Length: 397
Image (cartoon, rainbow, N blue to C red; front, top):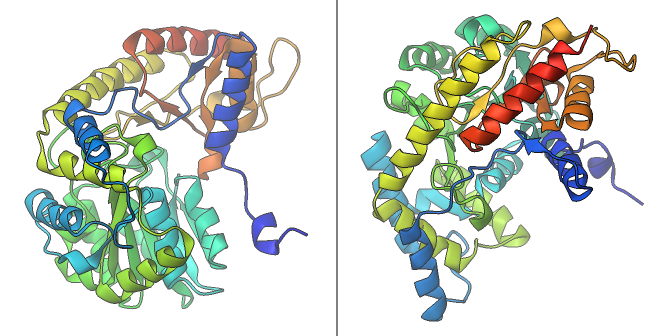
């Protein structure tokens, strides 16, 4: 028998598309994948060397459930240095990736029937994580005109007596949009009117901001700190996806509850990964800056190239490594074989099967008029991908 909880969850569309792309590639089909949110760079050498040293020196055992004290102390210093935020090590729990931190934070705070506000487009796992906690995800559909960012007015109109939390993600997955300090202050003013609402601030793409400094909700309103859980990790900024290392920082009662769940579900992340994370936060940031410059070059290429395709409308994202173009002009059109493109999912499957480009449909993110393209690939691959996308779009009638 399968539990009701498991049956109500949806399969990750990101993983589904990526899986199908890999199947086609194994069959010998030429596939360019713009679906996965994974940097194509190698983890910086000094981080790898720290892990190798940990292995050779025999640092093989379990660490404390909340993570190595040295790494939690380094995170405290990082949060002060980079974000102007004051935390203590006992307000931090390390996890097997930021994804786990988000999920456990929700499990630690959300009760059956609680509503969690989720601006759409949203990362595909947010609503499913809320369902896992038996809460009710409440998507708030944003607009292309605001670069898919939640407005204070939309937030105010969405709050009900059952609202327990809101999830904010900046830079955004899937759009790459970044909230400005002014926008976050306006959102914070609404949240101040509702002191029982928790804030989950997902800042995993913090180091991939192309203009100015990253700002989060606590930079806009430090007084919200006692009800904000800040989520971050090492996967994106340091190209450490497979190392599975993230963390949550927040009020002690919530962090303690999260740690209790973690102690029963997974325990601490790999000791080797934690040593690597320590090197990441205490070592040179030069490789991060180099990766960011490469992402910026790719972003500029993709935005220009996509906007030159008739029917595609694409704003310039401020961060992350995603573009979320408006493709509504192609919905309702028909392929050469007579298949009608009813949804963005139909369009993505067509582009994958017939033109060898893997993208993720906007349907998966709560925005049916778009699709997500990751530019975490080489310029050469991106150039070929644009040619294939143009051919695919042009063939629709």
